[in-house]
Structures are given as structure tokens and as C-alpha cells.
Image (cartoon, rainbow, N blue to C red; front, side, top):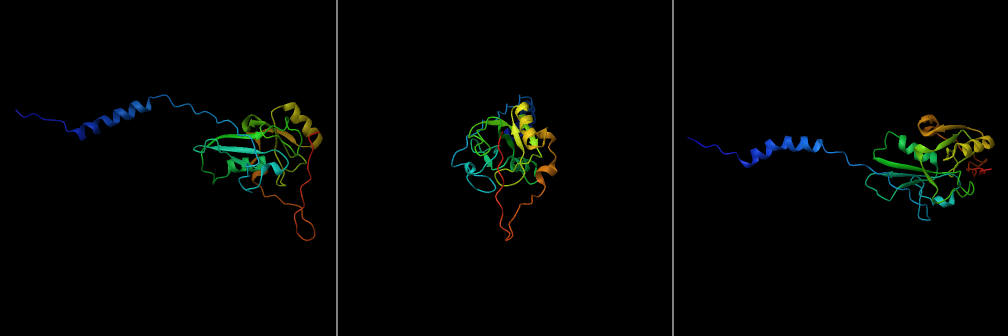
Length: 192
């Protein structure tokens, strides 16, 4: 009578499907949305590498997986939403925050830590305002009433993030220039 023994590699190979099956049955780890990070003098715009505090209008921050506590900051909300929607963007976005302009002291001082989740904000689009880099801006508010008041004074319509058309974000922007071709500074808005 011959006794057959099971070799260790064969046993491990046989147990592999069982281990995979059990792993698949485990509850998914809850992914927590990272907290927003306050703007400081060290906060630089992702595209322009300029100090955010030196530019008027609302700002944005995008958090990526693996970059805990170090979001990408954007000088304009429009730029952050464009970043999110670009086909080249391959990072896993864990959160996007935008300035709540309803809590801002002024258009020039949007606030260092009055952030709201981008998908929870009400946006005024098509308003007669320009963001910190001179392009048309999406103006975010936590309060629908404050967004309506802003739109009454600056034009535009109220929309949620998912309803903002790509053309409004990704379309090229024409900047005003003087007779020598130098860019003219954007006109600043007021929140009143």
C-alpha cells in the first residue's frame, strides 16, 4: 500500500482560491473624506505656482489618494473642476473643496478656511466676474439664498456641480489685452 502525501506547494495552491473567496467576503474599508486644509502663504496654485492669497476670488483644493494632508490648490474654482474632468487626470480624487463665498469677507479675501465640499455647493455660473487668474469664475456658496443674492447683483444662474456643462469649464478663455498685447488685469467683483 502506497501512501500519498500532499506537498506543501500543492496544498498552498489548493488553498489560494479559498483565501481569495474569503477576502472577497470582507466588508469594504470605509473611505473617509479628508478634511479641508486651510490656505496659508505657502499654498500655491497647482497650475500657476503662485501664492493663492495674492489673488482675488474663490479657491479650490483637490485631495488625491496617497497625498494625505497635501491637497492640490487651485487659484480658481474653474481650474479645479477642469482638473477633475480632464481625461488626462489619472489620480484617485478623494475630495474636492471650494471656498464658500457666502462666508467670505470680500471678493479679495475669500477666507483661508471657509471650505465646502464641491458637490454640496450651489454655483453661480455665467456671472460678470473673473477669478484670481482672470478667467470667468464659478462662484460657490453653501447657502442658496446667498447664491441668489450674488446672481441678482452679478448675473448668472444657479447650478449644482454635476449640472455645470464641460464647455463652461474646459473651453479656452480669451483675455483682454492692451494695444501692445499685454494682459489687462481682471476687474474685481464685490460680494454685495
